[in-house]
Structures are given as C-alpha cells and as structure tokens.
Image (cartoon, rainbow, N blue to C red; front, side):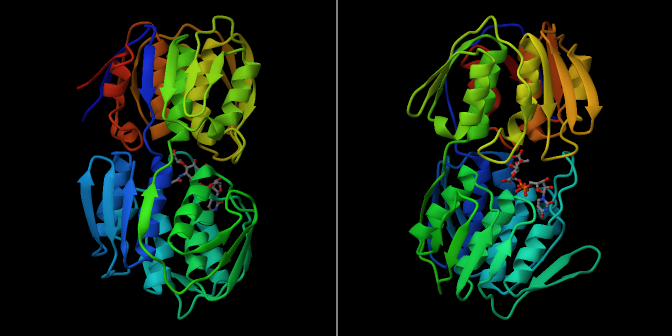
Length: 417
Ligand code: EPZ
C-alpha cells in the first residue's frame, strides 16, 4: 500500500492551482444520465472518487469517454440496468445521487446503503422521504433498497435536515416530474447552485438554487450540454490553512474566493493576513496569529470539510479555541492521532474539542481515516519537526489530485512510496 513520507518544519513558497471540485463533478456525472444526449464534463479532478463514479455509471451500460486529463463525455443513450453495483456503490457516498437519474429515466432503482461511515452515521431518510413525496414507492430487503414509480409528480417537500446530496437529488428528479415541485430548507452550497445552472442550461427549469427555497417546473426531456466544474473550495481552503499553519507565503490560483468567506472572516479574527483577488488568494506569513473558536455549519457557514485542517492550524496559533463539529458526530475522532503528534487537545464530548496553542508537533506514523483528516495530517506533518509517515493514502487520493507533486512544487518535502 502506498504511503507519504514527509519531512516537516520547512517554509513553503510560491503558487498552486486549484483543481475542479470533486463534490460538484460527481453530481454532474449523475446529472448527465438525465439526458440521452452527450454531456461534456470539463475541469474534472482526476481523483479516486471520480474513478469509482465512472466505473459505477459504466456498469449501468452508459458510455463514458475519457477524452483527456480532466475531460469526460457521458452519453446515456441507454441505461441497461437499474441495479447500482453494490461493490462500487458501497465505496462512495455520492453513489446515492445516481438514484435520482435512474428513477427519472428508468422509473426504478435498486441500491445498497451508500458507503462512507467513518465520520459518523450517514442516513438516507431525506432521499427516501423526498422520492416518496414525488410519488415513488420504497422497499428494503435487508441488503438493498428498491425505489420505483409509474410516474413522478411534482410536490412540496421540506427537508427535515439540510442535505447537500439530498437537495441535488431532488432537483434532478423533480426536473423530470410532472408539474411543479417546491423544496424548502434546501442546502445552499455552491455545488448545488452549479448543478442547477448546468441542468438549466440543458433545459431544466429550476429557480432559487443556492437559497433555502427552490422551485422546479418539470420538463419532458433535457438536452445535452457542457459542464465546467467549479474550483474546489475545500482544496483552496485547505491550502490556505496549510500556508497559515506553516507561516508561509502562498498564492492560491484559479479559485473562487467568495466561496470561502467564512474562512477569510475567521482568518481576520485570528490575525492571519490574506490578500483576496478575483480568482486567487495570497496568504502572507503571520507570526502573531491568535486562536479562534469555530462551529461547523451548512454553507455559508464554516464547512465541516475544513474542520480537520483548521484544527491543525489552531495547534499553531496562540490561545484556547473551542471547535464544535455540528454536522457529523464522528468527525473529531481523527484528532487522537494529532494529540499523539504533540497537540494539546481536550475532548469535551463527541462534538466538541478544546485546542490550546501553540504546540510543537513531532513527526509520527499515522493512518488516514478519511480524505479531509488525511489532508489535515499532511498539514500537521509539514508543521512538525522530523519525519512523518501517512499510511492509507487511498483516502487522500479520493479527493486530492496528485497532491504530493503539487506540494513539492511549493517546497514541501513529501514523497509517495
Ligand atoms: C456532502 O455530503 C459532501 N459530499 C460531504 O463531503 C460534506 O461533508 C457534506 O455534504 C456537508 O457539507 C458530497 O457532496 C459527495 P449532507 P452529504 O446530506 O450530502 C444528515 C467530503 O469530505 N443527513 O449534507 O452526504 C447527515 O448525517 C464529504 O468530501 C440525514 O440525517 O451530506 C449530516 O449530519 C464528506 N439524513 C447532515 O445531514 C439524510 O438522509 C448533512 O449531510 C441525509 C443527511
């Protein structure tokens, strides 16, 4: 199994380009199945989760051409089966969004509970209730769910929990339902808005995506089109945090700074200097940064996917910080390893920790439990004195394209072995 060997304690310098957002591209692949016409996907990150999605869609008999790095063409002229291959679907939480186009195109879908439970319980009740509201019937035989419908009808649905993939799946399904659908308490993440813009460019009629209230008028069919993946705000935020934690000067290029306003506001409070431009951000070395407490929230709040990198930064700033993870109950477990690297962390309960900084981190051998914690370990290893080994880097490759090659270019001592 591959691992990263990192020698920490060095300053980084230079500029780094952001890749397309994995969590936007994954949904665009699913949306491409709503039409029989070709869809061209651009700026797709070449990461493991995308490869799993491609395999899963190909197993449905849909044609996918990998045209060149970052570019794919999906042609779902025919969909040959309504079973999502359980072996692949279980590896990927985003597999659940494929239920939407299958229901809309085939009227039926059979699938396992989607994968990814290390960060906490991840139920799918929102999907079940949402599809039920559009007229679908749901059964569960112990191993697989089956959802079927003769006809999807527009309806009103209020999300009991704000859900990103839930909102995306409902926008896709309702686009092909008869009549109007009103969705309330929707997720407002930029990935949701980007998906709606793409669907609208193919002929869908979605109004209000990116706000809590979304109205969808169903259409009979969608055209093909081109999807340009938005920049990955989590990758951009993680690299900004890396620069701040290592007190380095780093320019983050080809990003969408506005998608990270919650991070810039937190940096302001922590006295970390940032220059924000239209599509780039420069982080300047800050030697007297102070700790700031944070609560993870749905967009536009502070993202749960940046909680782990931020915790590493808070081991390097001065003072006490309370970190409250409100989205996932298991997403602070990874900090046990950070403590072993020398961080001063007190676990208060499954959702809250207190971090006292600054701490001198020491290199260690660590196991990456999920992709965002994996990125946090890279940041911790680059801050630490001595050598660290990060095992199970498949988790990091799930979401970050060739991260070690890109970090080497800004001066990081990191090897894949
Ligand atoms: C998306 O997951 C992202 N994944 C996650 O990124 C991200 O952490 C999350 O949104 C929150 O921003 C993808 O887009 C593929 P949710 P999603 O449904 O949509 C509860 C990463 O690291 N909930 O918005 O699956 C749920 O348990 C990943 O790239 C229900 O209770 O998340 C959680 O507490 C990790 N019932 C909350 O809602 C449901 O049916 C928000 O989850 C669905 C969700």
